[in-house]
Length: 123
Image (tube, rainbow, N blue to C red; front, side, top):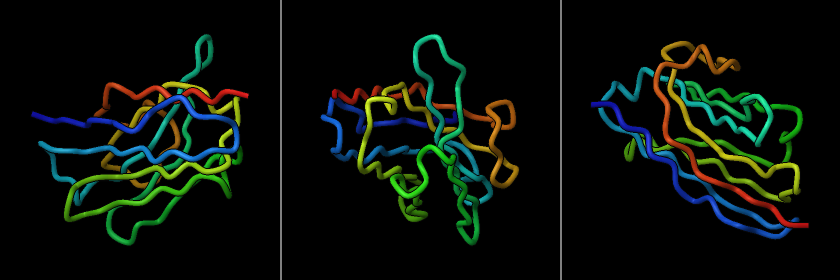
């Protein structure tokens, strides 16, 4: 059975940092790219960052470039999202997802999803 479990969400002040984790199991982790998405109330789910399998190529949305870093620990089958210089507009539920296709940006291009973790940034 496939599992993606996010953790690390919290309430944090603007300017602060958080590290989200996505622990995976039940699928061929080494063959999948993993992405982070977020969804705020009343808004569409948007891609934040993704990392390919193999060489670990990365993609970042313009809104987080330079502040967020995605990485993967292949020994632990876990993907991380380091979030620095957080802003109130980063407030959302954050989801990780896995795709057989590399560096995809749209939610419909992902095969497996986690349940999400809440990030709230206060001003």
